[in-house]
Length: 477
Ligand code: 5AD
Ligand code: SF4
Picture 1 (cartoon, helix red, strand yellow):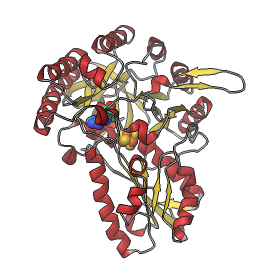
Picture 2 (cartoon, protein in one colour):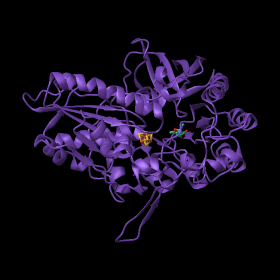
Picture 3 (cartoon, protein in one colour):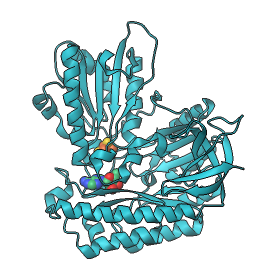
């Protein structure tokens, strides 16, 4: 999943700026309509944001715009922003400076800020960053054509209303930058969890679940178009719940997972993100029943220490988390588990930091996304707790977690040497067009020499010969 998913891949490392904790990917698809209006969109942040950009593209397409990868020829420049850490916002501000120069060369170009920063900063954007014409929050994308019209009439436009209902269920996303094999399907929006460090409940609003039948039909449509893997996306997929207002039919996440798995046995199903407080055995049993549901769970722990978890308002403690890992080991013995970790949260002691290290070791994560704590204005933690761990200490602890996770990942991969896995071919490997790459069920990237007659979208058996901490290297059997 992560090769085509820079949002997640980049988050692994220490130096967020260099390694691209906030990654941007140009979204493009050349079109040949002469004279039509063109939009350019850049996305930052989580996969949900990239998924939203595909909804925006669909809405703009309906309004007569076509996408371009060339910012200099666009009539409309959009930046879909992330607020999760301060660094993410800094990166966006830098890009806005760059768009200012583009706009100077092409007066009349409309520049718009979408997504989480739009929500967080609202009108401030129009006041402070004079170059921005348009500010649109994540629940207001349907209003884009109307807002663009307002800008063309000489106004600066804002719509940052959050909704309790909007799920964009009826909008068929335009797959912007796609390998044609793997796709993301957004199954819910918003978040009701209120983790004390997190800005998401403020920027994306209340949790709401999308009609399961629209999800299944999107998955079926993708399969018909040659896609072979879908990832169901939500901030907390385990709390997915939908009720048919007329019949009273209820669908929970385990039901949805099963409905999607039934689309076709050759359509792989993944999902992200699970919350330890909500992940049920029912979901694990559904995973066990279907070969095409991938045996991989992203179950962020955030901290290995119960006092810190309580301050983070995660609503579970370490023993609870350990119990969930044990359930996975029992019901799905071959599943890989990954995590998100924050170092240097308010008042974290060295001993508590050691608990996080011991958790990485104990849980045997195949990989983790690791961050140091970044205080976000307006969050529970910002209001309640001083951000009192000096940055050097946060970074040092982060380095220690990364170093340990790299060792654990390498060990995890070494244990696969000699095993054969079914791999879904996604395309050429990054390094060589003589090699294919694809993932196994555990979400590990596997690189192997091509053989004639095989194409992206095919499933092959690959035996692992060697590995690094990030990749398995093998040969087709
Ligand atoms: N500081 C650092 N990391 C954060 N995350 C969320 N908010 C913050 C913050 N304020 C991390 C969490 C989450 C992931 C998506 O980003 O680990 O799971
Ligand atoms: Fe960033 Fe969170 Fe918004 Fe995603 S939901 S774009 S991670 S702030």
